[in-house]
Image 1 (tube, rainbow over the protein chains, first blue to last red):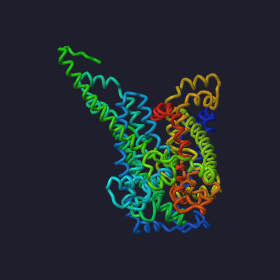
Image 2 (spheres, chains in turn cyan, brown):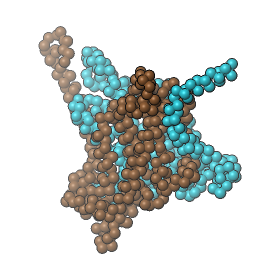
Image 3 (tube, rainbow over the protein chains, first blue to last red):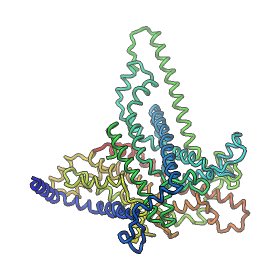
Image 4 (cartoon, each protein chain N blue to C red):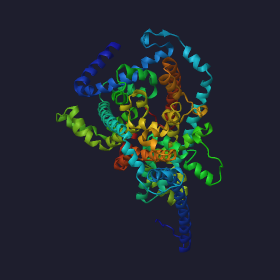
Length: 312
Length: 310
């Protein structure tokens, strides 16, 4: 039976190869890319369990089991990094969630299509700036000597002495989150705008006939229509928690704010690339990846249940 | 207006007035919120441009609040004179052009092949690609692969490890599945066109919107990318713009940019350095921001189609 099945699928494959050989040809470079640059590195993960010596290679280096993991969890920094990663991720996730929804709802009420378009274009603009530029901008705006924010705060009488925001650990998270909101609100509103544009117009008319004003239509028609999108976005973003935007953290990090800015992904970079501790940093990275994978899978399962949307 | 009211004039009048008042309140509310968002978004942007064209001394003494003070192009002149950015800009243009080209090529051919529903092995390859969204080898193992291929300090280390963005690939595949009618492909097939021919003469021309969106995503990604260059490129002459910017904007090595620094007072140097920072922010950001309006019309359409799962 199984043999017969195998024979049938082999026949199918042969037929498919004959009909679609050009498509298989097109797939070769794509598959080669994934094998060489996405799967081959996975073979290298084993160095997390070895004392890697470049001279001995992956397979020749000494197997040390969980040594590097024990070292990581035993270190003073492990707890701090895990806490920092989670707080920064969830903080960004929760605090930057309402703004795009609000923006989309408001834009939806603007009837002048030209004004709407201009508004959209302006709010998208920061998204196109690079992380380096945004961090550079934050640094300039908060500069202790001539930064605009210090000047304004002093003029308003809120502070007496200038604050060196970039080097104060307690300002790291606010600066990170506020600059993220500034940069991505317009862009993140796109998905809600798309959801809003597909709302059935007859629903609004029905609401109007029932005597609902605009505010009530927003509440009873618009919001329920984008609620599934909101839930999906929230859930899917939870899956990214361990993959905090380390590029930006790395740029904002300095010796003085390490207590709050030290996250797992930047630690991996420092230990691995800067200090050359390949095995140890791969172990830390693996711990992070495994948690991340579990999160993504869970979150997708939930999302599929709740709103029939998922990443795959 | 649907005034189906059968009641007296007076009642109709009142109800409309109530509605108008509610309308007005909402318009005001919306206006206030949008106004705030607009201010929040635009203020820093305008401020940066103003600082870049103000007299450096005015910037340093905190005179610039929003609009330029004693406008001058001094900071820009200085940047162009020194030419420190030139190398970085040229490298970035090269990496962005080659990288985006490779991205588009691989993404479209792969997505097209996998969008053929009768292709045996389609599910396997799709799963194989999707798995990499969930799990990856990580920083060091990837670095080792790039190193072992001898790509360190070459353009290839920037371009090839990121040759395909998995999310973009999936969007592209969904678009091909949803927006190209199967009958069209079949008709062409009956007439004897090969798959590659169908791809080039039918599928690609029908997918202009999504191609434009992909081009924009990849292009902005390459232009703004710094981390891979930080990892793989140590040779200063090959570093892209963002790595140069990192030195100037974040690590504050701006003084190195001024060759005649010795002849100036320290205050002047400081002022000019700050002016240069703002000018550099503007110069490096304008190309990408300016690109968006041209792509806007494709944007809504392209993204919508790709968002629907096939």
